[in-house]
Length: 113
Image (cartoon, rainbow, N blue to C red; front, side, top):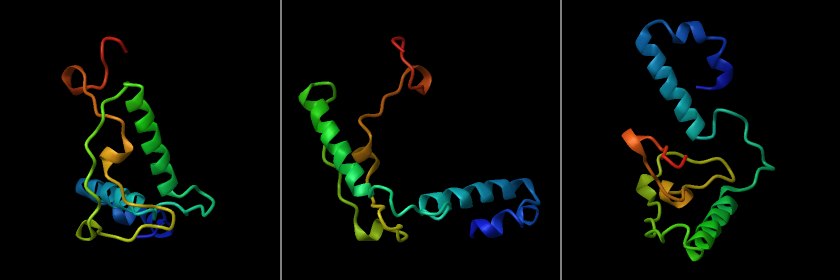
């Protein structure tokens, strides 16, 4: 589904309440595949961003601001379900976040916040 088809035919796509959920899923899928908006060839490749994130994590571990995390398993070929746009790369969530914390009732807020 291309965006140029989506908006002119919006009334055809949403006829029943359950169509909204299907449309939400389709839009999310397009976004995750890099098909929701035009890709800018001047954008920094994702691999460069991942290198910076890794360097920042190492710095924070050395400063003892975060604990050392276990290495994530590499992405296996059978886990790849679609081709990514140029400049994108597959990564595990644990490779791009510092840590996951939850506060009271599952929130990320703590008393100090």
